[in-house]
Length: 324
Ligand code: BDR
Ligand code: CA
Picture 1: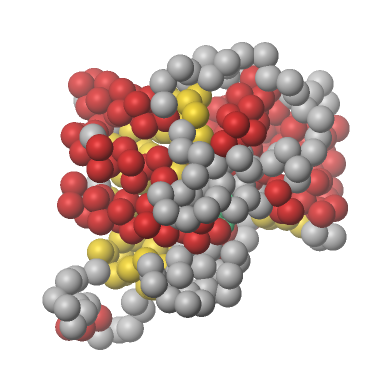
Picture 2 (picture 1 turned 180 degrees about the vertical axis):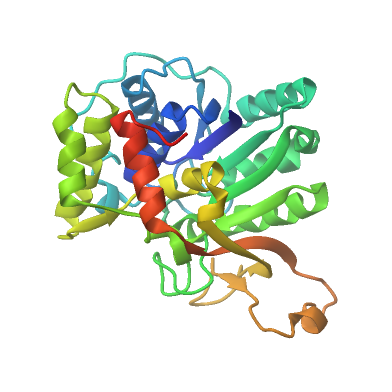
């Protein structure tokens, strides 16, 4: 199995991602770190513990991290994820405690251990990148223990928090810029699973009902109820599995079409702050520099996804069938 670490702001779709990462036999979930984003960080910690308990994975360490962006004021997304950040399902309370370490310290320890063991982890941030920025700047040696970063965030085309910017990058643009810069410096490969693919893997009402019908307050029921919450809230017939798609990309990379492209995070911009500016000009080979002489970072940008496959992979894992 692929060793993975998730950084989350649970979050309806972070919960979907956690269920997949906790249950799929192809993944070895080493730790989960929490950051303020969709909900305040204490709610995120509670939600994350609850999801892992539901998946029978209370053994996975969970740590509390940054409660606010590096510079911006926190803005949550409870209008999207519900007052408790996780669909207002009344699922709880959590019976176990978080790890006493700060998220950055847990990440440091897990990455160093992975480096020692010669089994570097795939880091999957699904939230504002505050914890990861602090980690890479404070303990750059952890790069030895990270095989790659695949993060949910950004967009080559339109945003969601604003017309320009995607929520995770918009929430902490400085952190996103730091992570891309540090990863380039440290030689860590980065894939952006952004809004261009995020909405493609969807679960319809019938499949959500099938998951709920499994019952027993287990992972399938929880996953189904989270999707049903989204169907109701947005009056939709089908809803994205969101962040869970980035975990699918670790399991089934062939379902994702990416392109190596120059990318910058907009840190100024009156109406475009937090935008990920992806340079898709076909002459960038010559022009991928700015007048100030600083080359943009190049990362793998996800442009297309086999949404049906990813949604099926997610649902089948929860239904207990899995995709081997
Ligand atoms: C991202 O922001 C949050 O609302 C979701 O959990 C996802 O990580 C989408 O923009
Ligand atoms: Ca998220």
